[in-house]
Length: 485
Image 1 (cartoon, helix red, strand yellow):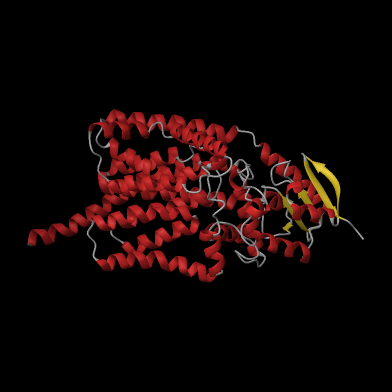
Image 2 (cartoon, helix red, strand yellow; image 1 turned 60 degrees about the horizontal axis):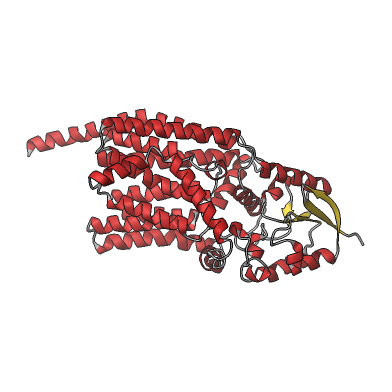
């Protein structure tokens, strides 16, 4: 007993020294990798319409707007609030502040994965998991991988949920699941492996209650902070038409296969070890497989297959590869890291050198809008590029920042389920009320003869015919100014 008492404190001290030594070496490496892999994100002023949507939302909220009332989206509020906070501190004229936060988010995810792997398989596995994750984290089209959007800020929350569950901190695990959900609904899929860990550990019923309360309280609190009915509608019940495979099936399937192939290239160093180990031994770690499977189900949910959806798969893949590499010879680890580094270099070059014709189009339109309107004027951009509002620094005339919410064109639908009757429930009465109360000074028809063009949308066609005249064309987009009379 005396020996145990004497040795126990020394073991704890040695453990703390070992922890400090590991992180003193690992953290600078992971931080450097996070900065390098995210470097392309700072090259472009804006990467995709989601960033534009969030930037416009943040400005509206900063001016006293209310989420799910003054401005609406099919997403929970965590990321719009994050943008609003970053803009409040650093200004809204640039996305640099949220790009820095995205670097921090990716670094946090890598650190949590490294900690998970180190606890299970040792120091080398910890470094391996963090490095492999960061090398694969940009393995998609740069518009998806480099943008500071929902999935990037969701990932550290999902990793934190697994980290807490692995340490049987069930209340904290539930809170992390809630944060993942509040960043993006599909983040809640991590609850599946968390519950499995709870079951595997044989935790008592009180721990299940802690997990449930930890998950429920943040979500309920956010619902009360916004509008409970609006929160429920926009995040859960109001997306039936959006989450449908009907319409443009071949187009959507092609997108899914393309993005799957791109991610497979990025994970060329991770997938072979997992496949190799599956052939020769059981890897165990059922919760990692459940994490991967639930993430895959989240990617499939809604049948849109956008590239940024696939980011959710990378953390469990990185951990599964790390687990497999513990069984295989050391040369396999070297091969996996070198292959991942080469693939990462390829995607870095893509991000740094790829042209952005959509951004150029949006910038030209924004310049035209700014030239033809005054700062206090309201503008309606009828299209799928809400970033035009942000680039032009003009106030949207409607809470609906894209035509997708009013026509169901969202997600690349270009088939039969596009039109006024497929809009979000209650959207057109609200839109007509907005146009009547505050008619836009300028309307930009950026539809380019797509299925939501004005000639196919009676309400918009009547709006233009009832007091607007064509005043110009920019890159195929038609500008209409309100007639003076």
